[in-house]
Amino acid sequence: LHKSSISLCRPLLSSKKPVILRKDPCHNPRTSLISFVSFAVAILNAVMIEVVLNDRLGKKVRVKCNEDDTIGDLKKLAAAQLGTRPEKLKIQKWYTVYKDHITLEDYEIHDGMGLELYYQ
Image (cartoon, rainbow, N blue to C red):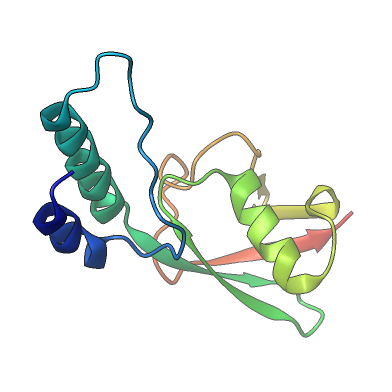
């Protein structure tokens, strides 16, 4: 990759680890630049939202995640803040218990939405 293209895309990436592109046997610098730029665009298109989880026992957890994350990913992030295991958490809204493999976008969970958190 050219130094100017890396310096242009560096502010777009929020992770602290460098992005390592795998070299193909038929390595072409143009295609690797296109894949790097498409990766940066995919990061920009991922919309970060904040979900509020209330356990009704006095703990309210604010979790930042992407809209395309699954409920299982949300449980892992919440478990890291709470100090519990994600398998012991149940997330629901009224009587709808959310399943781990379905995304937040599919459940239409948006920024600032409050969900109920129960311990199993």
